[in-house]
Image 1: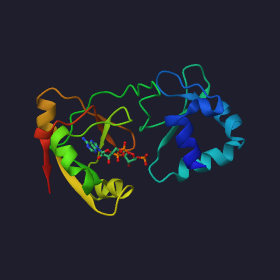
Image 2 (image 1 turned 90 degrees about the horizontal axis):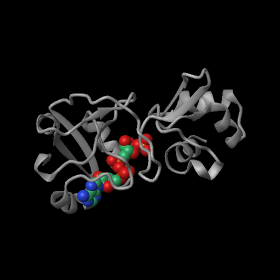
Image 3 (image 1 turned 90 degrees about the vertical axis):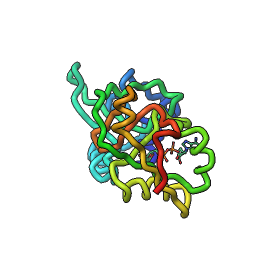
Length: 174
Ligand code: HQG
């Protein structure tokens, strides 16, 4: 059920006839109807999600709404409206070792998402890379240097760091 919610709120809302607003929100009631579950079941999915991927709040119109905190596909035109945040000196990115040659050439690219996703610590970066391969490389990103050069960073409420792209010159391999 959690995967299905991710799919609808981040990648393919139209699959269930959902419409996301410009900031990624959709009414809780619409999602419940699309999934055919009740509110208690949705609350359990949201609360039990290992990365706290979903946020529920009451919108300005008094209607309860839900969105994914990050990870939307580029094909879904969502602006999370997160403020710029000064990053720590170093952030981390875990990736399959087979991607390294390409990353050395091109830097980190957002691929099918809106942003490159960065981790605050090495264990988290390793876990992100492990989703895709057993042999993981962890890259160090000179985030404060990037920020000093004008690159913008955001941090989602669940601690994922986002930036548009990372040029090769700001990357180092452990
Ligand atoms: C790689 C999960 C070759 C990049 C995680 C990654 C994260 C390049 C893959 C979130 C490259 C894209 C995002 C280049 C980047 N050449 N490969 N130039 N630039 N790559 O899934 O960071 O569970 O879009 O290293 O925890 O793995 O969904 O990005 O391997 O927060 O909530 O291209 O997804 O969160 O893959 O993961 P992804 P990601 P959720």
